[in-house]
Length: 204
Image (tube, rainbow, N blue to C red; front, side, top):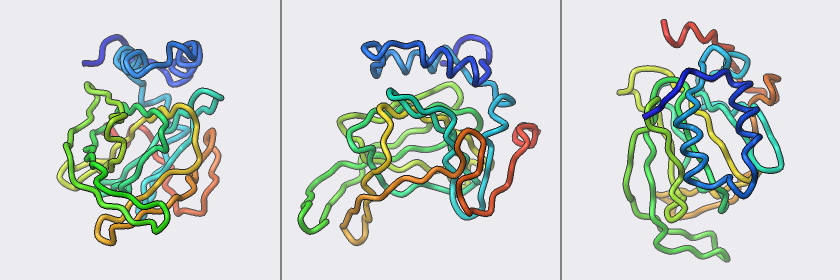
């Protein structure tokens, strides 16, 4: 359960940057998220939605981590992917999402073949930040229609990375793709048809 008062994103970033690299561990960052619930209003510069695809909005990049706000319309989901051996933590700023993990059964780098099997799934809401399981790092994140609202997640990636593996379950293939941010520091970097959201529209 989250504890403490809501924290503006500027304070959140300042305190996250103050964590020494040797203390930037799975348990310490997860505890940091529990004790620093985000004030949604302060995220307004990064709230961009798109009807066709979820958006990636870079808030802060340091040599140690990326902090990204991801905005999800109802019914949107990520592809099945990994984080190329980097750590990832997720916390909700608004709404909730479902995470579905997959177990790697077989993989052939020479041919691009892969076989996955479904593992566990869980829900992240305001009271339950989570980390990507280092033992099962392949997953997808979804905001199902049944949840009935938009969602905003904050993701901490350590260390920053620009590529990941994306998996096609039906074709049993995978490929390495380059990640693209929709906005960076509040400035649009993509040609997506975006809606700049007022934070009050999320809580009304």
